[in-house]
Image (cartoon, rainbow, N blue to C red; front, top):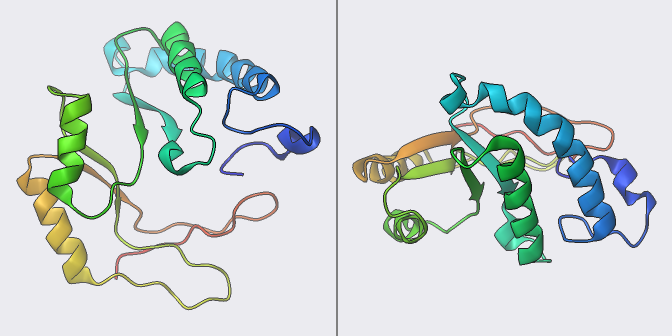
Length: 174
């Protein structure tokens, strides 16, 4: 469920991460409590939060609902203001230059950022440990840094989730 509460599935016809009215009502209810708690922590208010991620990997999600994305943007702006930097994260393949060209198209002046540089891959319970070659990671990281970009390494180590969680969040370098 990607962090979404399982009770959302009580309505069998609900369409998650879409402009489904029932889903949006749940989002609005949650964000009207959560986002005001974030606002004083924003960088422009003297806090440590410099950007806020609105959605995650939505470009590969089946609904591709632009009304939903517009709703989220309006909702976040309503609670956080116009000065906060909002972003989303989507995978773009392995060509660093092309990925940053896409980012420059959307944001011509801001800093280049790779918010999810994968240093490994997740393991599924009972399957072989997933390993990414160190030289491949070093090569790609060097390319990112050569572009003068900022990078968030995702992730050196994860954990295990139980119950209604996804249960596949372990990754490490080498």
